[in-house]
Image 1: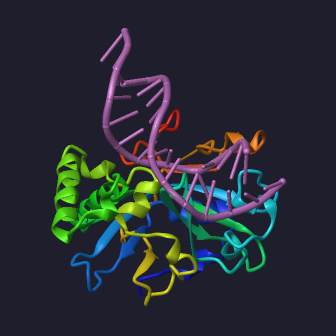
Image 2: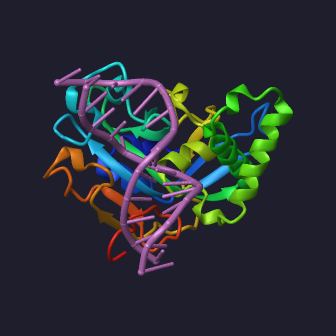
Length: 237
DNA sequence: AGTTGGATGGTCT
DNA sequence: GACCATCCAACTG
């Protein structure tokens, strides 16, 4: 048994809390040699249609439809035209809520994560898609990988866009059941014997557009004093 | 160590 | 047509 579906029944905030310390896993695929595993250390809750910061605030749309479905599925969206962000749908079927995975601590397959992040960075460069050969693209990717060598493992996936980058996730993963043992991408409980982490709650990041009270709700949950938590660092943790 | 602005395209009024 | 659940390089001090 690798997944724990029992947490799917929890209210969104408790579900988010239960996610801290849990593992995000991607199995090795035909093109990826390494299995990747990371510890979830920071999440944000987006709870219901009355949450003015939530993508569900305009009701059901083509983009957010999966948020209205059963819990445990992936909702991956594109922000700022370039970054993908991974959410886990929460709450019973028919309600619209989700938890954004904001940062993780790499545990296994760290080289594959570095390569994936370098690939993403290289792909952003002008003209990359027009490069004449696979070799030419590889040169750009290798340069990006070299630049990443100064980044410590703990900071490789310290931010929501980076989480999706190191796990090679994009919008096409929306709808995938993350609590199915057969899924190549899934969420597994923390290791046996590992204590539940101490949790700090603080306001969510990047939601000024929502105004109060949404901007003030302490719905960003992070592991206290963990180096992989993204900026801005929560106060007092 | 902290601040600023540019990149980029989908989504919604 | 405005805005965005972000990241990074290129500055300042």
